[in-house]
Image 1 (cartoon, one colour):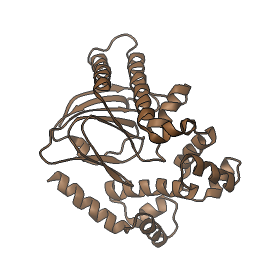
Image 2 (tube, rainbow, N blue to C red):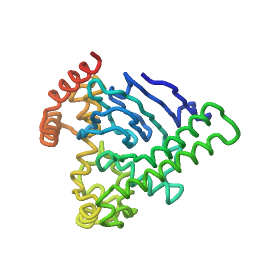
Image 3 (cartoon, rainbow, N blue to C red):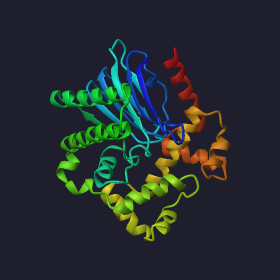
Image 4 (cartoon, helix red, strand yellow):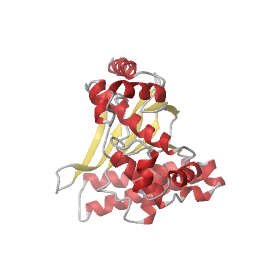
Length: 296
C-alpha cells in the first residue's frame, strides 16, 4: 500500500522528476521496480531482503537503501512483520550529479551501479535528523510555494550529504583508505561509456580505445579502485539488462540477445549461464514463479 504519494512534474516534459512516497503493508516495492531515477528507500519498520539483478541481501529496521538509475530491485519482507517506510525517487535532470563536486561525491558513495547497492544503518540521532528532512520535503510537496524546486533540491542535498557521511563512517574500506572515495575522473567517464554502449561494445579494448588508454592501464585502475576487471564490469552491466528483460518483458531470448549485441542467441545463452550459473529460460521461469508468489 502506498500512502501520501507526492510528485513534482517537470513543466517542460510533463514527466515526474521528484517523488516522495510513504509506504506501509502491501507496498508495491515487493514487485520488481525498474526506474530511470535514483531511488532512496528508508525502511523505518520491517525486516526482510532486497533483490537486485545480481544478488540479494538482508535488511533490518532503520536501514537506508540506495539504488542507481535503471537498476532493477524489489523488497521482500519477513512474515508477520510491520512495514513502514519512505521512498524518494529523483532523476538526473532534477539532481545534477555533475554540477558540483559535492553532488559528484555523493553519487560515487551512494549510487555506484558498478558495485552492490549501498545500505546504511540509521542510529537514533540520525533518525531524528532524517525524520526532520523528510517532514520538510513532505511539507514543501503539500504546500508548494515560491522556489519549490530549489527548496526540494536543498533538502535532498542535505539528506544525501548526511547519508554520505554515515556511509564513510560505516565503511571499513573507506575508513582504511580515504583515497577510495576519490575515484579518478577516467573511471567515472568509463561508467558513463559502459552505460551508453554496453549493448554494442563488449570488450575491454573497446572502452580503452574510447578513453585513449591501453587496456592494461585501464585494467590496473579498475583493480585498484573497484577490485574487479573491466571484463567483469562490462558483463555485469549486460547481465543486469538481460535479467531485467527476462523478468519484465515477453521478449524471446533471441530478441534479448540481439538487443544486447549478440549475433548468436546460443552464444548469449552460454554467456548468461556462465555468468549467472543458470540458463536464461530457467531464470525467466524462476522469476515468474517468484512474482506469482508475491502476487499470491
